[in-house]
Image 1 (cartoon, rainbow, N blue to C red):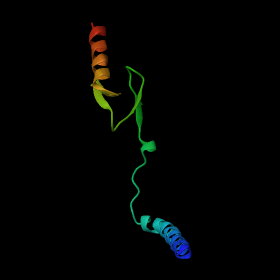
Image 2 (image 1 turned 90 degrees about the vertical axis):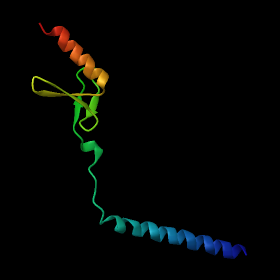
Image 3 (image 1 turned 120 degrees about the vertical axis):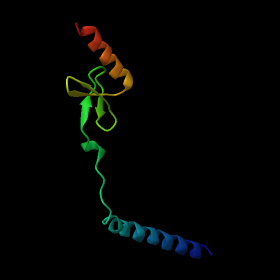
Image 4 (image 1 turned 180 degrees about the horizontal axis):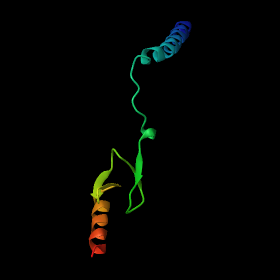
Length: 86
């Protein structure tokens, strides 16, 4: 009885090893997505946090784009511009 269980366990482990070795071949045909580490990041001018273009809140001033981590930082930036303008 114990010999049967040991053989069954060995067969199962062998099956898993063969399946794991064959898995990378299946993945070869799938397209690779863009890696997040290659995303362009910008520094928030208010709090200094770096934020990716994809997740940033974008504001414009004098035709230039500014990237913010949140709407709060964008509003603080606009308030600062309002107070500094003559």
